[in-house]
Image 1 (cartoon, rainbow, N blue to C red):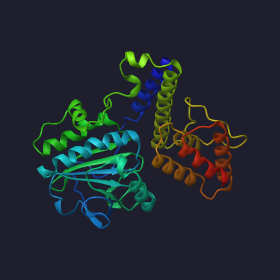
Image 2: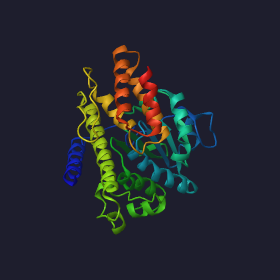
Image 3: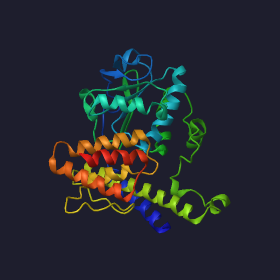
Image 4: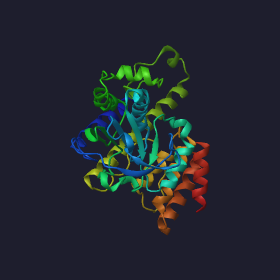
Length: 337
């Protein structure tokens, strides 16, 4: 099992290296920030149409465009959100811009996840789908586009395909410089954000088990390790699929991890496999289940073959008993279609 975990991380590292070619998204360093309109979800203008960057465009500004929300992306957004709110008194203007194919669904998701996200800086929903405002030239294949600007000009641009918390120091450094502050280290970020988890290292890379952990019954320890392997495998499959999209090639078939049933003589669509794995995560919250179920419905669309395939697949997964209660309810609904 340990060799499998190490192997997964080695593969993730290799795949990340393949994606290290420069990726561009949005205005580059030296270019001006242009204005676009969005609907404020939170903040003092909540519910109204607002202009971004708005009246404070000449001040130090941070714009975080969320093309896709994932757990690793949220781990990076949290410290930016924390310091964005903290440094507001120093003249920093910060804004999170949510991009989605369906703004109404995005608003519903944000409303449901408001407490768990617990974002302090204003959030707005922009038109233009996941590509965002047309005048910004954003790249739909990245997960986050983060722009740092001063006096209306971009001073730093981060187009991040696979974000995680370890990106926080390099993103916060140019912001701190604009404000005359020392760039926070990873340790300082962890201390301030107070996540209660080891942000600098993935779960599988933690130190040896504590005495208390070793005293747990073997089945419990095995179950916990299987959860870690499933999470690592999901991350690996997401990385491989994202790299394929960047290279313009078909997504590879998912590998390893939790075994999912075949779907008879139907096509084993890699995207459907990925979404099903995401749906049956043991720690998936209701909001995550709802969002994944919607993505599965969009995958099927009005295609009779795909709708039938999704229904058959859902029935088989129900029979095997995978997923949380929320996931099982979603599977039952899809099995009826």
